[in-house]
Image 1: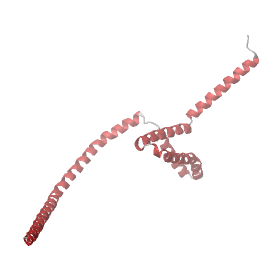
Image 2 (image 1 turned 90 degrees about the horizontal axis):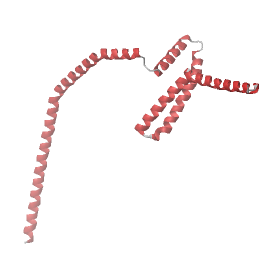
Image 3 (image 1 turned 180 degrees about the vertical axis):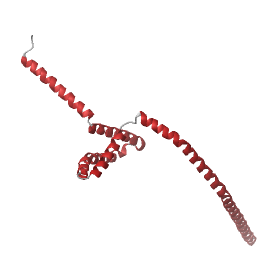
Image 4 (image 1 turned 90 degrees about the vertical axis):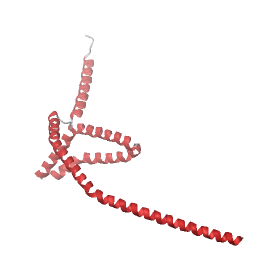
Length: 191
């Protein structure tokens, strides 16, 4: 038979260690805190990639410190929540609701939720179109009310500018005539 009892024991121990490692790894993968941590890390990665693309990577250190701060706060939250909620059923209910909301926001939308969102969008679309039309009508009325005043103001500015241009032109002509008159006197004195 070629296999000694010691070898069999060693094979059993190796198999047991391998199975223990696999079970521990599997338990780590499916635990809610690990799933939440992976989702947070994924979101952080997406955020950092988008931020780097938009702003460049110079802000990476600051964002990293903020992320670390948020991570520390989130990791210490269960203890703080437990301390606050102890003896207060209302606080415990609110905390449970918040935790459920957080977990549900991390999960992808179900087909039923997607259908409900589409139905809501279809119901809201006529209201949105109606509101858009009303805003356009109000804007048109405002434009019609403001146009005469704006045209009047533009005409006054144009008239004032023309008057100023005429006055400047007249002053320039007067100054030119004064200079010519001064030159003629100076020229006549030289003869």
